[in-house]
Length: 413
Image 1 (tube, rainbow, N blue to C red):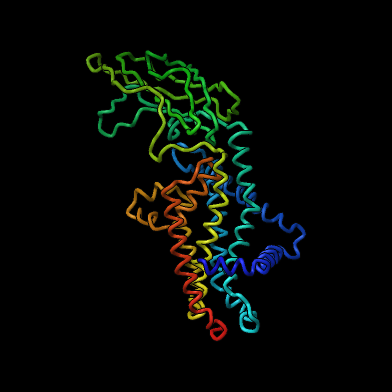
Image 2: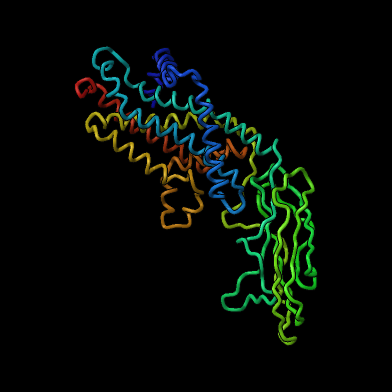
């Protein structure tokens, strides 16, 4: 590590020139130039939003809106793009610069550093798009809300019995938003229809509050058993926002199907009618920015160090075995899907493959990056310590291997 730092200090002018030339070469001949570094994240955000909000209606968790999925994935993919691009280029950097290494006195040790730094700087050009989206969706644009029927049910039997074999759970409606908001939002529920509240069904309070770290609250509606033959009735639940929220679905209608019981069988089922939120994937976190952004430069330096060390070792191996470059391409693809970028980590933690998260440094890093860039939180201490140790080990081994074989590079090329 000291070997690399000393070389960077000694050849800082050359390193700066290489980085500048590399950044310019990315879009040489392009009329928009560096604007593409900003446009790519915007396009990715729009694509992710369309696919995961409109097509798949995917949620990162039970309590996180589909729109947030786009930002969570975008934050992960911009980090991974910079990492994978750097790793691939560094692995082949000695071969690509063979003329310089063979014919002039060239400090080959700065090649991995300049490639990684260039990729991270390019990533930072598009980073304001992520931060701007957090400000817009988390603070400036009011959330959209809706009231919906769970599992799209339209009817329920009045004589519901939770103890009966194969019984269908009682109906639930839920108030949901497309993303968590920076503060809680209050809603009022109006119950109308031909069914009588308190006689034909039980429902919770008329006012529900959606916490800042939630995007969904469930409202059970419990059919009340009676011995009267009344015919089918309807329950109409209407949503009214008490704050600046755009409502895109304001009401749901449920059909209460009559199947009267003998008086001896009528009893109180004792089911809770209190609104509740799900805990299956843990609480979500409201989009936010804060002083934790001060940790971002340190995280970027750690990414540069980890990638440089790993790439330097692979570049050395590539001179002895040229298939290394192709294996890195396959390996980064496998590594990407083993990292929670397109799915939440808690899902893996509940499977036999939970150990993949414990040995995956990029999982720790992306989790920290999301904490800082999306939620205004400081990096988790455990992840920070683990990734720092991993960076130190990788730099020690990778740069050590690079230095030991550096004198042989001209002959191997």
